Image 1 (cartoon, helix red, strand yellow):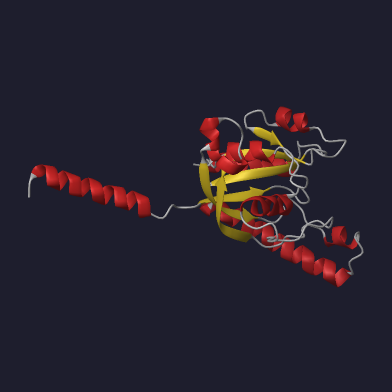
Image 2 (tube, one colour):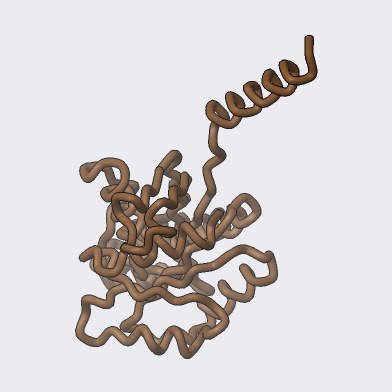
Length: 225
């Protein structure tokens, strides 16, 4: 066989392997304190790119409604359809496994659940499950490729929980995007989050209303490659 034929055969095999190679999904964890809107954000991503009738979980005003890690695999974010006008960004695609995590907290008290009308035995059960969920979420950091850290832009961002979360992720070298959620509310102040954590990219969004989500998707395509 001639050299040119061998070269063509090698190139053909290389092209075929690229075309049919299964793309590895990037595992993105959605982390943050309780009631920041993590499950709402996970549902928003799935509604936009997979199925508007599919939910990973239920969002309520009761803290720690999500008490176990939930993974939704194989989400293709296609910015050609849902991206910004920048042509370099609009061609980007990102295959994700979205990991919705329980709210991280330094203290979980069963009396916090009773304040929402839950009986004591149910409140204690939830508190135990929520504590186990926090431990599970922290363990997942060993298998996460990037984090969307969600914060409530109506609350003071400089809390012990937020500082501990960011310090932990920085120590692990995990890429972080901070999403300043709930900008649809009148007392939202995402600039406070930017001022508190200037070393990280902060994207103001409303996961509930879908506001500014295309900016978050574009940032995800740049950071989580």
